Every structure is written in C-alpha cells, then in structure tokens.
Length: 618
Image 1 (cartoon, rainbow, N blue to C red):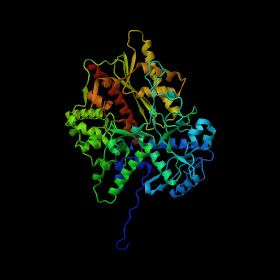
Image 2: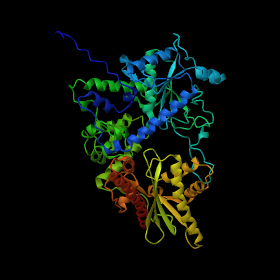
Image 3: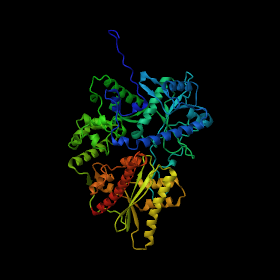
Image 4: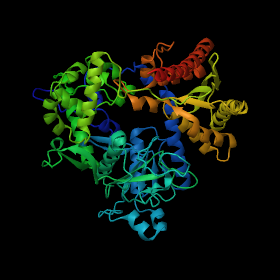
C-alpha cells in the first residue's frame, strides 16, 4: 500500500435480526470485545429444547406449504450462501410461486442483508382462483411492476402469537370473557396456505402485539426493503405465519397479512423530528420505524468499530427481556451499577427509551428513583416518553417499588380487616411443572385432611407426546376426583373439598387438556370442577397487597415465613433440572435432577399451604 493510499472501510451490513434487536448487541459485535459467552443460567435453561420446538414448528409449516404448491422452490438444502442467493434470484426471475429458504441479495448501500423463511409471488394462480373481490385484494395495483418484473412479498414463520385476542363472552357457565376464533368472522387479513393471497390489513380492533412482537414486524419491513433494492418489490406488504388461530378447520396455520406502510407504531414526536402534536406522540409506519432503527445501529457500529471511542459512550446497556438469552449478557452486566433501575426492578420494567430518559435526568439507580421528586421530574420526563400513554402511572408505580426496596419492605398491605380464604374439610394444594416445550410432566398435590399433610405426585420423566401428557393428566385428575367423591360420600356436615393454587395457570392447562380431548368424561369433569371449586390464592393476594418485586409465589411465601430447600428455586431452573433428568450422561446426575425437581415441586405446594394459613391469620 503506497503513501497517501486511502483505506476505505467495508460497508456495515446488518441482517434483519440485528436490525431489530437490542442496539447494544450491535455495539458488542463491532467493538473489540472478544467472542460472546453464554454465562447466565437463564440463557441455558431449556434453550436447546425450545430451539428444537421452534425449528420443528417452522419445518412443519414449510413442509405443509410445499406440499400444497408442487412447483415450490425449496432452497434450504443449498448450504453455500452465494449459491443460495443466485438460486433465489433465478427463482424470482422465473416467477416461482413460492420460494422456501431464500437468501436475498445484500444491499451494501442500504446496509441490509436478510433471509426470510419464504417469498410469495404476488397475484399468483391462487389469487386468480379466488376471483372477485378476493382477487382484487390479492393482486392489487402492484402485483406486477412497471418494468415487468414480478412482485414478491416476504413471509416469516414464528413460534409464538403476533396478534392480540379480542375479549368475548364464553358460552360456558360463569366463565370470564376469553378470546375466541369467532372474534372476527370475516378475516380477509388472514389467509390459508392453500390460498395465501388475501391481504387486507389486520383490523385495528384486533391489533398487532406491537410491544412484544415489534421485532417481527420490523424484520418484515427490512426484507421488503431488500426486495425493493433487488427490484422485486411492489406495495409494502408482508406476512407472518404464527401460532395464532388456525386458518381452516384442518388446523392449517394462517398467514397474517400486514400493511407495512400503515401508521401503527407509537413514537414520541421528538424521536423522529416531526412537527409536535398535541399529545406529543404520533404513529409511524413499520417501514419508517425499521429505517430509523437500522440507521441507529449502523451509526453505533460505525462509531465503535475503529476502536477510538469508548463504546459505553455510544450506547449503554439497559436490561430488557432479550438479556435472559443474550450471549453478550456477561459483558453488559459488568457495565451496570448493582443498583441500576433496569437491573433491580424487573417487575413493571420500563422499556429502553424510558430508562434512557431517566438516565438523562440523572436518575439511574433504585436509590435515586426512591428519593426523586416526581413533581419536578415528570414535566421533562413525560414528553421524552410520549410514545407510552401510560408513562406517568408506570413511573409512579416503579417509584413506589423503589421506595419499598430502599426501606426493605417487600410487600405492603392495601386493605384492612380479615382476609377471606374459602375453607373446606379437605384442602388440597396443587402445582404443576412443565417442560420447556410446554408439556405437563408433573402434577404435585399437598393434601391436608386435618391430620398430617402429605405430598402426592404424578410424574413422567420422559419426552411426552400428546397421548402421554393426556394419560398422565388422567392419572392425576382421577386421583383428585376420587378424593372429591370420597369426601362427598362421607355424608353431610362437612365443607367439601377445595383445591388451592397460585395463578390461573393450572386452571388454564386443565382447560386446554379438556379442549384437546372433547368428549373425555374425566377431563370434562376436571374442567368444570376447576372453574367452580379451585381457589386462586394469587387473586386474593393481589386484592390485598402490593409487592416491590411483584407478587409471585416466591416473593409472597417468603414473607409468610416459608423457605425453599433448594438454593435456586424457580420455574426456569426446574426446566433445566428436568432436561438433566432426561438427558444427563451420568445416571447419578439424572437421578439427582429427578429428586431435585420433585423436592422443588413439593416445596411449591407446601408454600401454597403455608401462604393459605398466613392469609387467614392477617
């Protein structure tokens, strides 16, 4: 390299995940910080099983779709990135109806690369078969470009829900309103795999899960931009196949069509340089928000990759849900004050922009928030977080939690007088354990008939399928029904049987099991009995107490004087122990993990029993 030669840095190119993920990940990836290490226990818990379940869902969806489109092009077997990109371009130029596993050409000028699960040709034969208005919706004015090139739309496959459910009355007696498939009888925004081209926008009254699933929608916008750069985009639409309601009676998953240039994302006015509105917030299209978020991450990468600036001055870590499984967590954790707000206050956690707004106003720690004068803080804080209409109530609640932590008070009573807890002659406490894949493998009961309480467990330490999970449930619920019928046969004068649990999870899971086996007499009995005779202690606690760290069983039972035998009790950890009980190489380790899970579950039901007595004594 001769004198005066200018070194041109390679363009920063981010894929769709990086462009929508935590910006601190981009910082770590471009600074000289070594390789990421997964050190946090939470990052390991059940992750392999969850990834297996996710991959299985994606593979099943794509296999179903390919079977419905005989001439679909499946590029997943093509391992070489360059070859896959070339094959994707060839398939698009050849107007293939469905391209599975594509790799879009990178756009260095736009700083993007990406590979959605699928690309769908707009206005294909499926749309033509639909006819009438459906065909008009499907084809649209941009089904073919002016230059004659075909139009493709990106499709993502996600193993979670992306839509908010509507609340409608359940016809079951006395049931609370629940979300139902019939919530929106006409669903032109949801399409089947066989007829995927219906593409009205998701109705406002249904709504996208923008707070929890925004990254999915930003990734769709990212891929649309890549298609545009390659010359294969029309009107900005994309689809997500998720675990929301099936599209047809056969249970085929639905495509949810999303209009990417419709304003749906709440943004503070100052965050995008628009004219101030009366509310201080406005709605931005997903495309615009994706562009803004990408630009921020590109600026971060550009600032830190030369190693001449302090990366912490570019962007600071904020604890968010992503951190639990992030490979960079240990690096971020080392930069945080032990009293950092986002680190210590997980319950009702503020989002990234709210935390940053507080830091800019010199409120970084729990102690600083506890002593802050909110009447002075709020006038400048609220305009900075105008994207959240509930920002003031969220901050006041968090400040209350901070003051409680500083005082060392985990809970506060909000009512006076005795606390009513329904009683029975036979009282049974229930807690279930599920694998990372959501299978119930353990039903634990603590039964107290006035004598010595005893623990009864029904378990399967095995990889359960639908049939195995139902078989175990029937075994446990048959035992429960025998107790109930035995108490009824003992004659009048008793107060019957009550089953106590903490949170609605047990009832919801029994409901789901019964729904999977319609006509099953035992499960039908259990569903009715759970709705009428189960007592959710969490509801009683929530009606009477406020918790600094929330009102989870681990927090409230400790206040009631209970201690778990395990030093690391928790549902996520129990999933790790269950995985060890099944898959550890050492038989001794498998047996120890099995005993640990059973002891943990026994302590959970004993904690529920202790809490029940403590509540009655207040």
